[in-house]
Length: 283
Ligand code: SF4
Image (cartoon, rainbow, N blue to C red; front, top):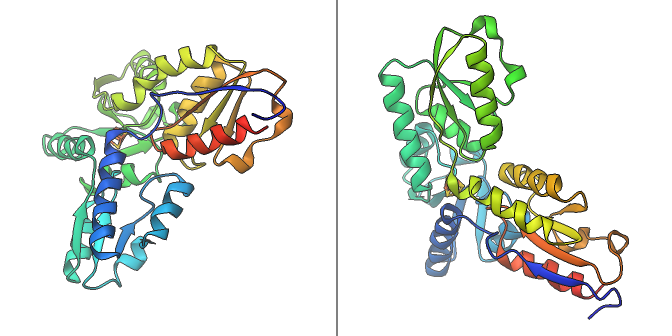
């Protein structure tokens, strides 16, 4: 126990969602069997977890590198991929381990069917997020993607649209956008495709964050869901700190005998939250 005598608890509901657990299990199984695996993009938005798997032999590749790879095994991560990635990989004799989350695969199918039916598709999400690229690729990039209501030009929106969401967006913001569109006279066919693995964490994280003097929120800096959930914690507890690894923790954040809650995103490994706990207990 360190001199600050902190009381530390980890939120047992934080950590990987089942989509990410599935992808990592598939990667580990292949690495155990062959010691070699290429992963298209980072398997999870968490540098520490990526480093752990790289140590076991996983190599991250970009889309450009995919087109030059031959006769290898490539994992497609939980975010899902557009059809062009499958075509490119298979054309060069590669084997694909498809670790796309089942929820995303279902959503991709809905997206295709909706487009084939003639819906005018709008997608609330981050334009460069891999899930969004994978989704929009299903329909030849015909969806209008936007990250904020303010990004939309109301004059250009037709009278009726079908609105989908990236699975990790905030449920509150999604319904605020629906309301604003409807208030502007646009008929919205609402397809709430926010993953409940994420949105269900909001109420429990709110409760968790109120129980402690300070919150240490652990997530990768590029994690979408990490930034949404971090803001949820900060709304409840202004003494909330975002860290990606134990090295980013500063002693001056804490006072003697503070209670500290540790929580994280759906892309945060439990082992990393335990490392953060160890560091706090030694302050
Ligand atoms: S957040 Fe939901 S949709 Fe995304 S990978 Fe996890 S379980 Fe699948």
